[in-house]
Amino acid sequence: MDYSTIVDIFNEMEATSKRTELTDLIVRLLKSTPKELIDKVVYLMLGRLRPEYEGIELGIADKMALRALSISSGIDMKRVEEMYVRRGDIGEAAEEALSKRLQAVLFKDRLTVERVYSTLEKVAMLKGEGSQDAKIRYICNLLNDAEPREGKYILKIVTGRLRLGIADYTLLDALAVAFTDSKENRSILERAYNLTSDLGFVAKMLVYGGLDAVKAIRMELFRPIRPMLAERVSSAEEALERMGGRCAAEYKLDGERLQIHKHDGRVKIFSRRLEDITSHYPDAVDAIAGIRARDLIVEGEAVAINQDTQEYLPFQELMHRRRKYGIEEAMKEYPIALNLFDILYIDGKECIDLPYMERRRILENLISGVESSNSSNSINSSIVSIVPMLIVSDAKSIEDYMFKAINEGCEGLMIKDLNSPYRAGARGYAWIKLKREYKSELADTLDLVIVGAFHGRGRRAGRYGALLLASYNREDDTFYTTCKVGTGFTDEDLERFHAMLNPYIIKHRHARVNSRLDADVWFEPRMVIEVIASEITLSPLHTCALNVIREGNGLALRFPKFTGRIRDDKSAEDATSVDEIVSMYRRQLKVIRQTQTGIEEDVGREGE
Ligand code: AMP
Image (cartoon, rainbow, N blue to C red; front, side, top):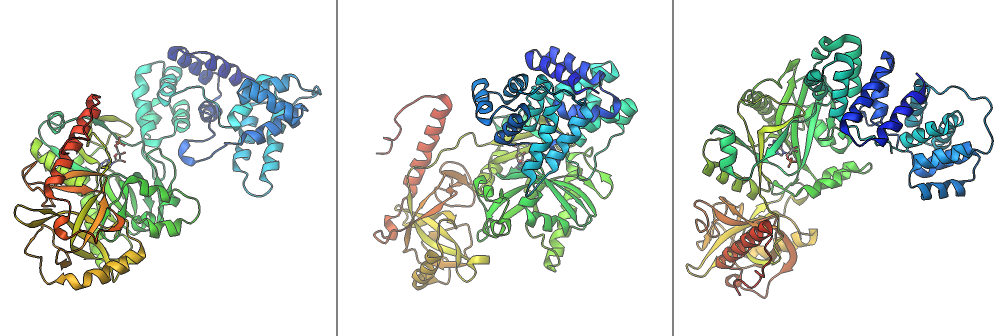
């Protein structure tokens, strides 16, 4: 197939802004493509060489592409760069430079799609020392035989700049029209695409085997499945109504979604965007490799945790995992918990068409197996668990569960239809996300009393891993717990705290301390420290202002952090009071409402 055939159509595609026209052009291109090239032409149209999940990147730097252009055109680098700056588009710069080529090329070899594709493949595969020169040579080799408009698309593709604006679904429409004569069949193609995430593969199956072959496509290990997505509603009532009055509420964790494939000991992890991110999570790989199923596809959320308190940390902490080098250190420094929430495949059995509850049961069985093998320490799967879930049938239970989830560091809840299959690639109301609709950083710091502590683990073994903090209520002269804090301490702080708190250790919870949590060590309420937090939330775990705002809930700090300041200038009774926390919470709500309604008002004065 002549490369110029696709180039001419690419040119037309770039010129149109109408979706129907674009679809027609894709249909024309697909129809003029020989069967054996169909997958390659599909990838090229999308500006790639392979399905995205294979991670084959062309992404040649502009400088390198321009150097090839300079060599091939005989125009010096400075002028080529000027052309690029003036045109603002590397493809157009290539077109101009090649049309002003200094030496006319007398004998050109034919440029075919096959040749362009296989050369680009070589360019993508070259790695390491000397690869730059070799890449330039390959690109020159193509440019030397290219007409100016062909050169335009060669440079666009190698620099990753081909943007024809073809959405996956437009391509599916076009495939249906080109090879089945009816757009109606798109849903059959779409199903196959959702299961394979590979449009080239679906196109190939279609041209060789027709719709029957496409219908027979199944999910496969190590080929990511397009993830099921959730719709959003703004209230528990609405969620419940959509679900027909009864549903599952799962914690919505704030981490990174992982789709994990396993066969024997081999494990691969895909991101939500289906990139291969196996190398970011060696600990998850180990944990899943140790699970007793031979074949497995599961989904879960990796969340950064504080190893001492086992509390979830904000999503940003996971960013440290996104690195090429030093992942072993990052793994130790930023440990994760892997909370599985779905199972798509196990030991030869597809699970996606099973209803939610059945999938959940299979997952629960699998994880209970993990937990029991943990006790013998045979495998490192302790980081794996199943996401907490509650079956709910009234709005109040949803709200209570949501406060609990938020208090434990989650974003909110995922409400799930008990009977729904796993709808790959679909966003719908079978999953509904119920999030806190606001985010506001508490501006004020709080001074809280240390009333208890929890033993440290890992790096903090032998010291305190987290402290239990309380606010003070003058009316009944009692300290009410407000949070557990494990963040913000340096190694010296930890040493210091151990020594400083020693004299205050008591055998039982202090009589003036009201706590629902059971600390490992209790103290006489004496020492006050300063903390900051992201916000104040309702919590069933803490006793500060219990039942004041909401029945069964107290107020707690979300993501509390020690500021480094010990308030030895304050006595325990000088600590931030329960009343102050209540008014901070109310103020925060007011700010949130205003942000939502867009009203600007000075609320900082309230409570003054
Ligand atoms: P959003 O990114 O806000 O559209 O929410 C969807 C994302 O929430 C998913 O892609 C997952 O990464 C994440 N998530 C956290 N917890 C769950 C859960 N229990 N079930 C499904 N997705 C979850």
